[in-house]
Image 1 (tube, rainbow, N blue to C red):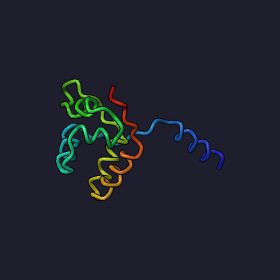
Image 2 (image 1 turned 90 degrees about the vertical axis):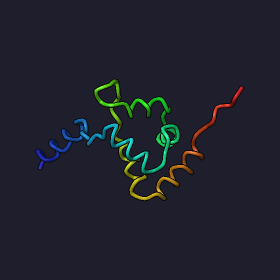
Image 3 (image 1 turned 90 degrees about the horizontal axis):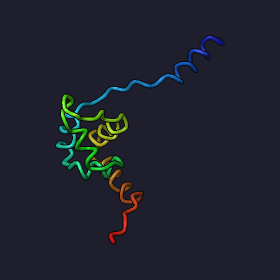
Length: 100
């Protein structure tokens, strides 16, 4: 029994490995949802330029797409109402900067 607990704790301390998506899958998902890079950036809490970097081909200077972005994309694709919920949450939680 103790061995099992130690193995579990060792696994808990190891980095998780997630299925990664590439720029093509992200682009197809955004097209399917009718989202621009800017609107998607707002939904996932990043800047538009970061989404544009994710959309660059892997052989270019594209960045790895984080797991949470993959999860949110698939959540929105699974049910359009999820995207509407995220839009409402984004509007509630994003603090707009005052234009000077």
